[in-house]
Length: 190
Length: 389
Image (cartoon, each protein chain N blue to C red):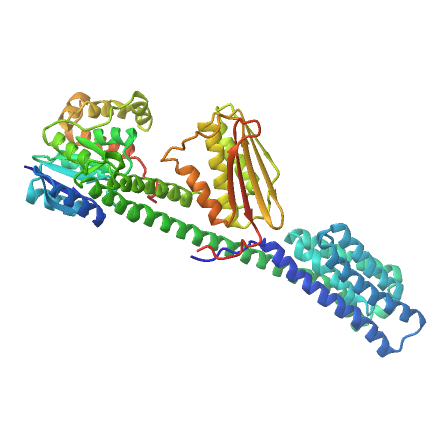
């Protein structure tokens, strides 16, 4: 059985995902939350294997949240669940340490497959095109580009600090800065 | 939703109010002058002058009513000032009953001009009046008495006062009107943002949830033809529609530009490096905002189709607007519409929806010699004031 935590600000989406997960034999929702506070609470209490994280949480940068989640003790696998899953978001999601990215319009079978894959340690990410990487690199300062390269190479925070020859807390700040810069603006925000 | 009404430029409303003031004061003073003369007991020449004043008052009001362009014509203002001062000169005394009539020549220029120029016009009027007074002769001995000095100064200062008051009033109204328009636009934009937010953050999420739950239903063997698959396709099309609406709602209103200019801009944005030649013929300056916005979107969509999908080398946009109808025709020489329009081609559906929203017709047909596509939107303008909720 794979335990799944659903974080989405819209009740219809939470209920929808929980409903379809319950139709399967091997996936079960351990809870559903609508914001960062509930996420941490539910993660500590239920220790899910997979977190299905809405990309567009009001008032929260989901990518930074994902990054913090992945750097917590015993991190769950994270699937970024978004209405906009294009390749520029994919790069930001990979940099934030997410194992998967899935479009909200995908059918339930695809959702199940994605959850099973990330739970077994695989990645569910669109292939990153060279143009998308260049475009992402253009958003960053010159000295932050190696950080992005390391992040895309699935390096953890200690690896980044090591490779860059900087203290861990400085590396953490640099990585946060990079993820914030890569954030894809959802058209309806603001 | 608030009804969108036919847009009349606010300047026109304001200038109509000033014109009313001009008519009332002009007629009143043209009548007062002969009355004053009658009280004093008129003689031969003064009867003629009274008739002239009455005739001139009626003539100017009639002319300015008939040809509105005269109201803002500097040459007409100068002719008017010369004419009213000529009456004073003909009367032979600067303390003339036609003085009040002369003052009314200030109403239209001072309210139409920018403040600085209006004050210059007022000063010019004072100088012209002083010159006229010098010409008919000022009795400098009589001026020596306090009352006469006061009277002369009053005659010279009153035009300045009138100019100042009218200029200030006109400028204040203009500022208020600008402010009102600005706050109206801000309110409209806030409302559009709110609707966009609701569509995106609520409706779209619900559709995703419904689609997800449908997709989890056990398949009944019909594959793509099953009702569930069809329902999911519809929901997926609905999210595309919502995306389109959200983009529209977040796009700018055609504030301050005409349909032709906006479409030119749209073509310029798209044709950068595309090698397509776009020409826009005709324009529709004063469209209701609602019609302009929809027509603009239809035009943009047709342009997009021509350039992106049909690889047209030339696109001609023609805009014709009469009092009753707006005709927008986009002709291209591209590959034409595919016979079986893609199910996800929400662009065409969006164009039809817009035409419907305008109570108009949309015709999409192959070009004259079978090449390219003609997209023709025809929308009524006389009913454009109706509610569009």
